[in-house]
Every structure is written in structure tokens, then in C-alpha cells.
Figure 1 (cartoon, rainbow, N blue to C red):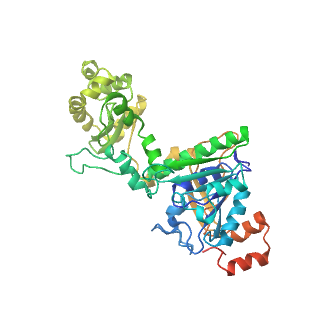
Figure 2: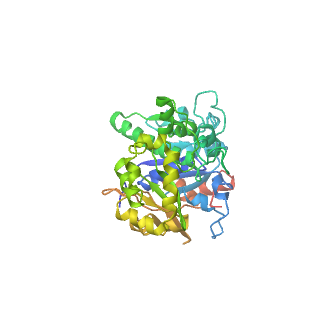
Figure 3: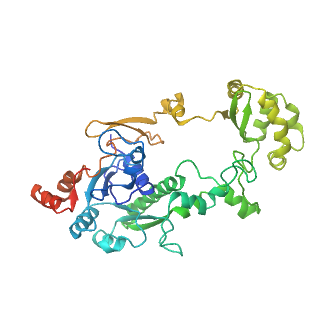
Length: 407
């Protein structure tokens, strides 16, 4: 089956997560992705374990999450011959993705200006911590650092003064992942621009910019209402009740988004008068008077068993549920019905499980063609097929340390 991006060629010089996440998205949608790695080392995340894949590769489970639908070539860009090979691959590419420090590729002749000179319509994506401009442009950026600097950790975690209170990072590398998604969106926009005009362009994307943009409602509360966002644990800054509650045998989640749902829920838990109380009747009042409201709701909810209350909420079409552990959610009937977990196999037959592309496109769905490769496993094949190198040329480059086979 042909993907929506079938025929689009991506040269991925990035490593770790934000760049590889972007190129994986493009690969899922059909693009031909060539991942360039350092001989003898490979992508940093290959070593980010345990756990590791039990096939002798030493590849971590972390690496596997972001590198399917790619072919790996191991080329030493610090060697002039290696840089020349990468330039030849770029000349055949539609998109180049890199996440080196600002100016870091210029010394190899792999910066935007150098590659644009040989491929004028090239789309060149640069991902850095802080962008190509500004006082922090030369600083390295990392997900955890950006989560704190962006303000995200100021609104994540239990309130100050409570046990366990204080800044808390999100449990996944959210800044890297969302930067990868914004990168894919930007690349698709640039492709459409090139289709209309024939022009390539450079995309300058920063982790900090992405995470600040994702402050969304929290930033708007301050910019447009003067309300300083703060850590509130699992409570919502505007909508109440929208949090976890303790039942007789565990906790549940209640996410009521409007006055009708609030009225129905209070009736369900035996407190119908709350919906007629002028302090709580409308959403704004519940937000202002949340402590008084929760003081009455918590004892009523605590009398329920969690499964009974969730079942009653589902029958009343009210949004509620449990906090699932990852092993539980991956076998949840809804996830199984949506087909989100995929079984793949490496070239040697080693099985690998991956989480699939979440959007279901009716005409051009995502495909799963290549399991995450071992470092450099496609070097010889790609150089012979893409660049026409002979077996003798490939062997000479390998002996000289310019390229390498799989680790």
C-alpha cells in the first residue's frame, strides 16, 4: 500500500528524540527515510537502557520507540569523504533533518547554505534547544531543562505546601515529542509550499519555543486575565470538578466539562441540591468556590466503590474512568480495537513491538515497513542503490573507516 508521502525522500541527520520522532512520523506516512549515524557509536538512545533488545545489538527499548520505517547508514561526517557522501545523499533528498548545535554542520559543508547550493528546492529542518537566533542560541537544550525553563513545571505537580509539592516534570519527554510533531507539521507545510512555488526553505524550530507555545490555556489565563497559573495537582485551573477522587476502594477520575454534566453527576452521587446552590450552579462559580464544593463532594464520592461509580457514570454518559498502568492500557479492549500496538520483525527475525501512528487515514493509512534498524545495517545497500557505488568502492571506504556495517 502506498503511503501519503510515498516518493518523498528524507535524509535524517538527527539523533535522540525530537528529530527522530519527526522522521518516524514522515516514514509512517510513506516517506523513504535514511538515518545517518556515526560509525561505531550510532544514535545516543541506542544505549539508553535497560531494558535492551535481546538480539545482540545492544539496542535499547527507548531507541525502538522512535526509529521504525528508516534505513540506517553509518557514515563518518568528520571525514571529508564521508561528508561528501552525505552531500550526495542530500542532493537526492527532499528533506534534511538535523539537530546539531547552531552552526555545527557548517565545518562539514552540511549546513543549509551548502546543501541549498546543490539542491535549491531542499527543505532543511534544524531542531535546536533555543533556535538559530537569540541570546541562548549557542546553548544546548534538553527536554528536562526545557520543561523547567518553559514554565511547564510551574504548573505541573502538587501545590506548594502539600506533601510532595513542588515542580514536577511530565512522565514522558513531552518537549522532545511535541517538537517532533511540530517539526512534522512544518515539513508538510513546506512541502505544500514547494509544490505550489518550487521553492525550498529552512525551518528553524526550538524546543523552548514549542513548549512555550503549548502552555495554551495556562498562558492565556495570564496574558488575558492576569491570573498567575500555579501547580494544582490533578485539578483543572478553570473547570471544577475535573480531577481525581478517592472512592472506598481506590481512586477514579471525574472530568465534567459543563453545567449539564455537573447537574447530572451531583444527582447521581446523591447531592442534587448542589446544582441549585448559586455558588456552584455555573462553571465560573464552581471555579471560584472550588474548596467549598469539593468539601461536600468528597465524602459522597468516598462511599462508592470505584467500579460501581464508573459504571453509573458511563450509563449516564458522564466522563469518568480509572488511572491505568501502562501494561493495562496496552491490552485495553479500546486500544486493541483501534489497532495501536503493532508487531514487527528486524532483518534477522527479532520481534519488536511498536506503538503505531494514531490517525486512521481512510485512503492513505500509515504503514509499517521497516522495524527499527541496527546501526549501519543498510549502509552498503543504500550507497550502492542511491549513489551507484561499486562493491570495490564500498569496501575501500569501509577499510578507511569512512563507513561501517551494522554494529
